[in-house]
Image (cartoon, rainbow, N blue to C red; front, side):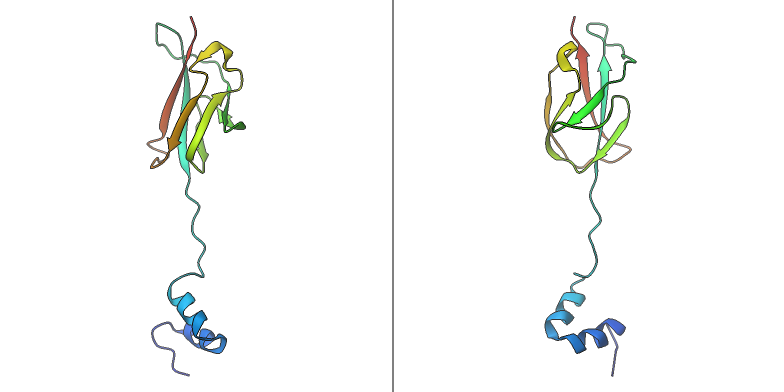
Amino acid sequence: MHTTGLGWRRSFAVRLGAATVLAIAAGSCTSPKPVFEYVLVSLEAGESGSRVEEERAVLIDTKSLGRTGELIEFEGGKCVITLDRPDEYEPAEHDVTVEDTTALTPLKLIFTRKS
């Protein structure tokens, strides 16, 4: 059997039928890589704006996915980001869409300690 172009894939696909040839040629047999987005959540003191060294759990859509000061990797999209004990910080939540970020350029969010 002649196998130029698609090589072994074509000879295998011909045995399975024409629809399979189209699927293989279109690349549908490869799994897409998952796309991850990145966020970095920080805590700051009220009026001074200095960084607070306290660690808090960061919740994304009510799921604990990381801690303040650490790069958090997740699937991204529209989400609500809160702290595990938000009563001492404001805003109470960040309602954001996380997209087009990288590990080097994450979305940076700040929660400020209430005075």
